[in-house]
Length: 238
Image (cartoon, rainbow, N blue to C red; front, side, top):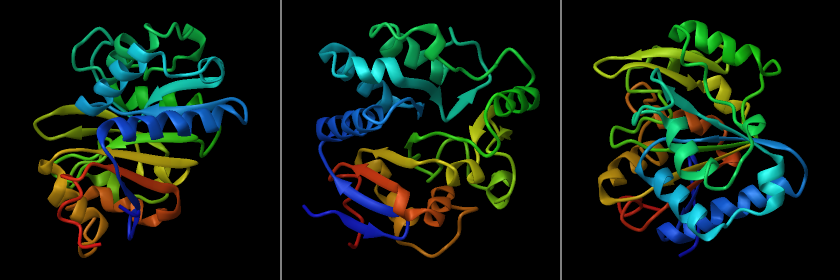
């Protein structure tokens, strides 16, 4: 099926394995041009990607030598916690592939949330985010930890990283709307029928980013690719 051009970027309809292979291809393309930063995501699909990649040793030595690994958002929990996004990346991908500690950049979750966000941002160049940012899409159309009604959504000129308290879910550390605008490219992995309405809302429905946070990607559609399976893309009008 041909790619779909939408308000929020290009939608490519692929099987899960094809989507994983495309993510690997993007990582390899970045590595071919030197060192780069990648922001991984949390959730079940990234964990499946880690298992698929590690089992097949699908990343080249160039990627392993040149990629600096981050996560686009994080819960304020220790890396050993089952709720830690970076912890999942460590256990599922970085440790199995032997990525050295010098290439790992977790959020400083041992600090208070707002201090952790400031410290994380201070370690980067001004306005710097990720060369390649990997995101997921929630059933409620959230991306990273920009949740429906999140006050960070209305700030287009704030810092690239911030702390936010998600009602009922606790404090999160996240790339922001302005941080996403600084990313070189963004890949969003979306799978399953439960995401179909959220994907349509983000890509095609009337503008309302406070309700559908993924719509902030409409500001940079040329840099956004959605890797969606047929079920997730089933509600798109195309």
